[in-house]
Image (tube, rainbow, N blue to C red; front, side, top):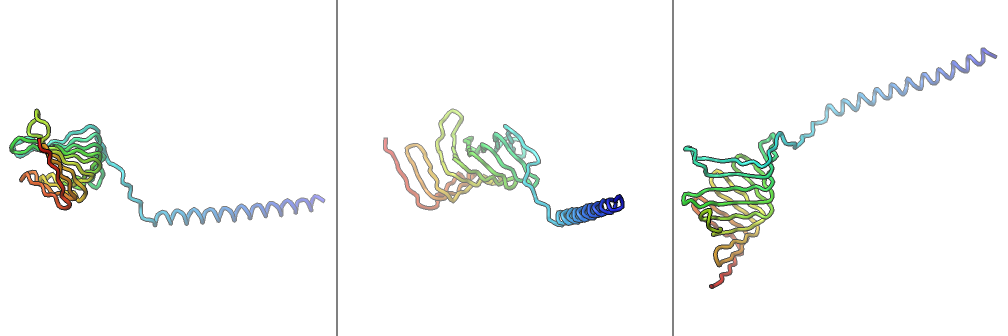
Length: 194
């Protein structure tokens, strides 16, 4: 009777042994295959910031060190590809006649050192001096600004107000150096006589 029992135990252990061995081999094959698949797959590029700034102000000067432009924002996320995202950006540019242009938006993105795309409640104002209210105000939802040559453009709806006049249009091109604005299409105006 003990010989029969010994054969049964040996036989069960053999089955358990072979089952564990087969399961182990299957696990090793699965891990090897999974690892090699992961190594062959191209890495997923993450668009994560390499640094950020809060409440910053950048000043751009002429060769003599005279300030010409300022870029401020509540927050900037900078990325390795030299792009950046801005929260509540404010661009300011001083003109030769000492007037100042101010461009505000809810959001901005920097594509290069000179190109900024602004979105959300974009406002452009011209101030003749610090003590005088804005002589010109322009509103749109999107605006591209080139800091290198002080130009900008939008293809969206635009509303411009100056003194007693209000003009709406679709599309705008401007050059701050030449103090020129071109409204592109569907231009309509209202003038209030005082």
